[in-house]
Length: 193
Image (cartoon, rainbow, N blue to C red):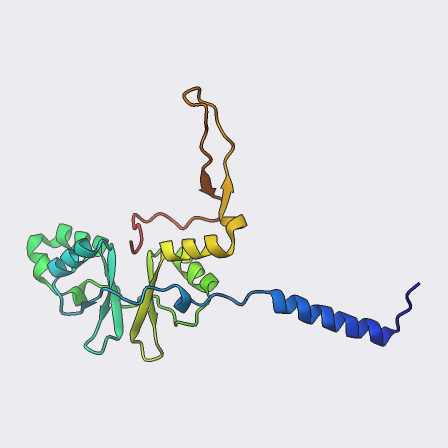
């Protein structure tokens, strides 16, 4: 039989806790997976030019920056469509600054994945600018980026196999994956890409 003193048990507990804590992965910062080559527009860009830039790059929204590349807002396709519907095609000649969201959500490069995910889901946004301490645009994280990272870090939570269904048309049934985690509200915005 093994006999341990209380001090030995305490030392063993401390050692085990240290080993367990050492195996817990650190939170993934957004700087590890953000897009650093960000397409943006200036506040004095016309709505028409912003729309064209979105179409050219396949984006549904863009960060708006000042002459120092500091984030001053966000503009998305819906903002432009609403402006055009209310004011006609002449509105498209006006500057983005009059229609952008000036209070845009943003994060720092050190922000953990789970915080970025929470901001995106709770606010039903498709993209999250990453800025430095002086508000300079460093990158962007899309809803898709977050989902890809979740799948990499938490595959057992994000996906699961569906049971095979025999519909009589094929000898082989493919296995599919589906999301079992919370889904962000569908605001008609498919995100950055």
